[in-house]
Amino acid sequence: MRAFRFTAVAALAALAAGCVSQSRQVAPQVSPQAKRIVSDGAGGYVLPDGTRVQVDPAGGFTLPNGAYVRRDASGALNLPNGSRCVPDSRSSFACP
Image (tube, rainbow, N blue to C red; front, side, top):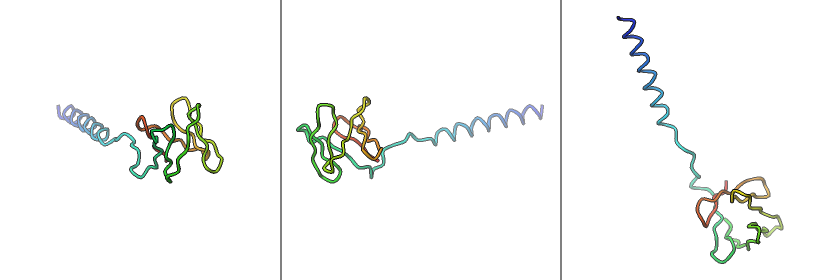
């Protein structure tokens, strides 16, 4: 009987520990310091440094330095440095 109680208590403790560790898992969020690319409401975007660019028919745009930012099928912006800016609303993108 004593062995059964010990086994039951150990199983309950393991189950409780699993529940506690799962409750601490948090979904990844965009950093509050993330840079943002925001729609200007007139067919362009305002870049994090304040520069305005015009969006082309493919959804991308050319940076002032001549590099092209492509919009992919998921709606993200692919920067020339390999980073992706993901849409976080209908009018803005969060960048790393």
